[in-house]
Image (cartoon, rainbow, N blue to C red; front, top):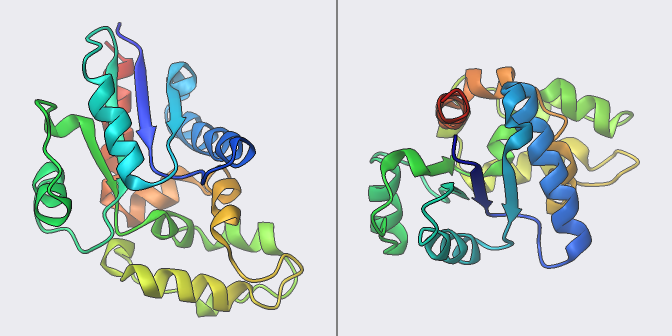
Length: 197
């Protein structure tokens, strides 16, 4: 079985922040697919850096390489087609199973599990401020962020910041996220298939 490497958008620019995001995303994936302990997560900071790292890695045929980035907008096409139309990113020969999107952004996956957010932020957290859409991928990125900020403004941790997300991704329940975000389910199914062979 070829090892799996995920090149992920996120983690900011500092080594500590990337380590925190790596640990959070790994924990999330392992809760969904226990075999994902073997998956290597490479936090790349920005979207372009993630794409560039993925593209460079494709020269190594001894690993399964996956790209995981925010969609940044509504998705109505296959992942590579979406990224080409929005960013002019080419697949460079990678197949559809190697491209995965957080639709519209990582915050969608966080909002999908209000219970995990309440446990993290505790006193002052207002779940009613979060979008209640069954399909969380229909909620615009700006609304995802502003609703999180509103829901957390009066908590001891203060209003939501991107750095909170790097911890929270490891705390949300993958089953709840997959139930409200089909792109997450697609990533989990891909990992389960790759790690079962």
